[in-house]
Image (tube, rainbow, N blue to C red):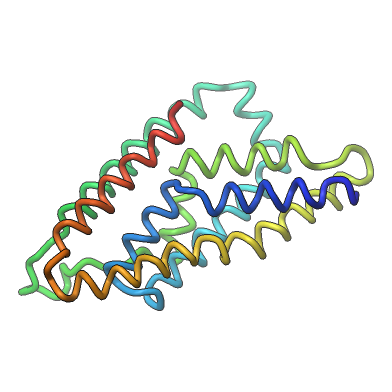
Length: 198
């Protein structure tokens, strides 16, 4: 069991702290709504990833190996959805006359559901549950350690991106850099698709 501890921790840290759709959207959310209002989105991401890890441990990876078209469909639809979100970030609504139409941060449920359209999440969770668990009677114990590692490391890693976004929020409030920051975050979100379609 000890032999997987460091590799799992490094894998989880690398996968959750590097740029990807979740982190780009969290940066945009922090910039637009602040860190506190982005917390439900953060929690939703973590819950979505944990649910995917459980499904992967129960055989989702086997399903994708047997029917690769399912994974390809999810990858394409997820990439298109991320590009749609990138456009919304780059060109946010400026109409403040109707408060009900005002942009809102992603909710906990939306954050969790988004993981099922996020190709990087599939790659991360299926890899974690196919490479690192030990065989035989140690499978569930090692799978539990992987889940625990994601539960602890993932919220800390992704919170850094929302925190960075909340720093950008001050510049957006001043108005001088608002359009540039929106374009920049939109482009970064769109570029994150490149990391997952190759």
